[in-house]
Image (cartoon, rainbow, N blue to C red; front, side, top):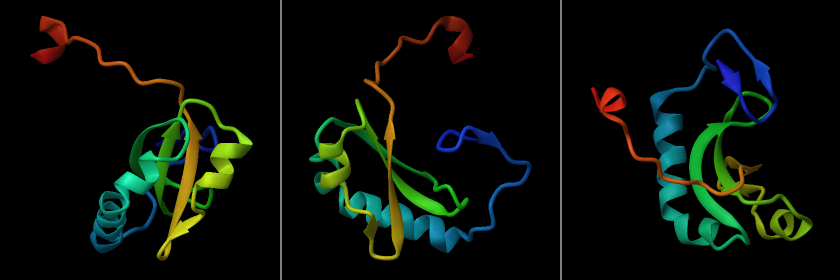
Length: 99
């Protein structure tokens, strides 16, 4: 499995329970407006931090000091990680991809 935060590949899925994952999803959803108000935010997700722990991810166009200052480090007991992605663009699926 590839961790885009560290650029490293690890062999096993990290140990986390469905409860931990569900909690992170719930927190992300409850705080969606706050997270999307971070300057340059283009999306949110759930992923791993650099310790291979469940984290809320905020995807931003460009990682700046303003972005870092606006993003919470934690929401409750879940780390928030900001990831520079650039813009997201929707692509039309070809007939081959949809099959």
